[in-house]
Length: 304
Image (cartoon, rainbow, N blue to C red; front, side, top):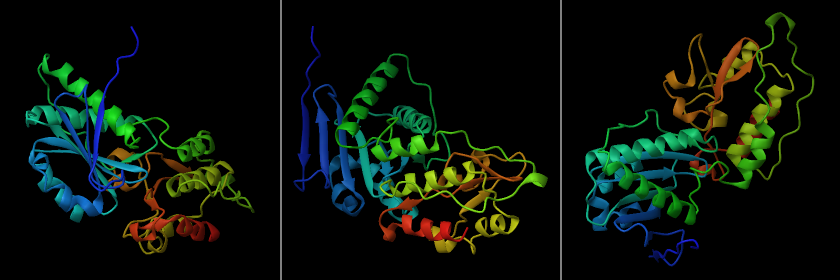
């Protein structure tokens, strides 16, 4: 037999995929999905489906936060105040509000794990969710729900759970694929007199920033103690990060990204320079109204 056909239904309330969208498909008998830009949250949550149990995604061009709620409307509105980086929300629920607390805990945990396995998007989740054991008869149903949800997400252009979601990430993967340099002996370290050129300007801001730091360190560049001190402080960094966060999060002995207080704003990679290990700020945007931009990173690079 050939591949089984399916029917996908999409209602574009604004006549565009960039507006509020209602999505379902024939293989997702009880599933319901909505997508909307941040500035349409209030209009989206007027719909009755948004008051149900479900899971949701907050998205930017390079970051995802996975959550679950017994009232999707109330929870997503809270994130308008406590998370300022996201530009799109996706809600996933059921037509008959049949999800239980265990169901949404399971789906949230699965999506967080999936986001953590791909290095193309930075997860803003500090915890792995609340994985609860679900009944052995219920688990296949939830897994099928999740499979169909991932299919529909890709269909509407949400590819944060894919290994290579954007061409920009393919390019930065090539630039960043070499192993990060190990710290050389401190007594035998000299910074090179020249820096490598900046990476491809066509890369997205996040991919551009990561390629810049990887290429720099791979040339053997070593930050001085003064530079480490400056870029690990808010005062020395806020001109570039546009937030009250340092550009570098210096790791203490025995510390890792998983144990860092504010690690959600930093890449998973641990970078090394001289005797120092650090995380680098990951919140780079095209729109300066959202925060730091590629131009901010270029200004920082020019100071080295």
